[in-house]
Structures are given as structure tokens and as C-alpha cells.
Length: 227
Image (cartoon, rainbow, N blue to C red; front, side, top):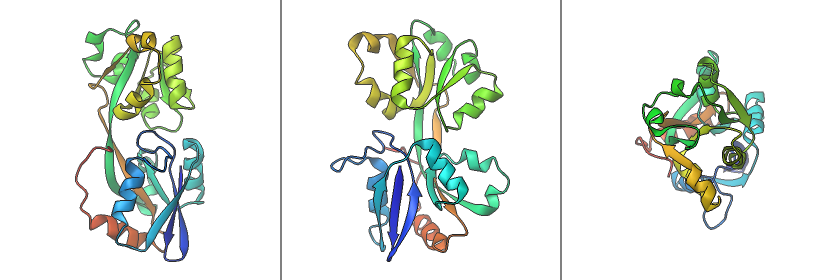
């Protein structure tokens, strides 16, 4: 997803991607992130438009310097030493992640032990561009990169993957679209990789960076769910 924030008469690009129900693209119910941006910048000269981009393209644009602002997990940037010098990371909210799994393939008692390493015998789906994939690589967990959330559920339904980790509200949103028989084969557990903080990432070199950074700091945002 691509936000254009209007600062005075200037347009500042801010990248995001569609992630229902957090970002829906709907005028009547745009989701948490758009509503929060409206609330946070209501007393400033900033307003924003929304355009949408796939997650991987969103990240590529940011890393190339095409945009200076980003909502993201920030892990992919923090892994790079130069990021500490080039970016500001402003906590915004956090996803409450759960494991969605095929009950015919994975036993509940194994899942409830709560360690990602327990997933090693299984094939796990993961969205392209998400930081959880780094953990799978480190733990040598068999995984397949999938382009969309809808594809994750289709592959789980067809038995091509055994499980995946996804924010709870996001998974519940897509689960509603499945048939009753498919829903009965899928369960979720809140014991694995529970929280993932989302940051507003600011490139320090942008001439509006200090103002926007201070504006967010002055809000003293508490630890909170992205809902």
C-alpha cells in the first residue's frame, strides 16, 4: 500500500500494502492504520491519499530511496548496521500473531508447547517480505514463500502446506471466506511467536523527518494491538 502524505503543499510518499482488516482500501471502513493516521495528524497540516503496492515492491521502493516513510516490522532494516544511522524507528502498534495449522497434520499438544523449532517436521507457508522467514531459515524449517494471504489459506486447505503464522485478526478475516468443511480442518494456536511490533520508519535525511518524528513522540503511544 502506498500513502501520499501532504505536508503543507508537498506530497510525501509513505508505503504500505493491503492487509485486511488492518488496511482494507474501503472508504467506509479503511481499517486501523488509516484511521490512526487521520487521528494522529488531525492537528497538523498533513493529510494523506492511499494507493496500494505489493509488499515486496513496497520494500524495494523504500530501500531504493523512492520513499522516505514506511510502516513495517522494521526487522529487515534493523539487521543492517547502517540502518541505525539512516532511520528513525517509531513504535506504532503490534500484531498479535497466531499459528494457523491443519489439524489433520499437526497435533494440538505439539503446537501448545509454543516453540517455532517444533515446526521443523512440517512445511510452513510464509508471506514474501515478512521477517518471520529469517527465523525459518535460521532454524532450517522447510517453508514455501507465498505471494498473498489468500494463497496461504488455499494451500493449507489443499494440504500443500501444514501451517503458517499470521496476525490473528487478519487470519480470522480470511478464514470467514472458507467453506465449513475447510474451516473444520483448520485450527489456530496463540502460543507461537505471539507479538510483532510495527514501526513507523523515517529516513533521517528527509527534511520533514524531525517534525514528523517529534509529532509522533509527543503522542506517547502506549503498547497496543493494531486493532
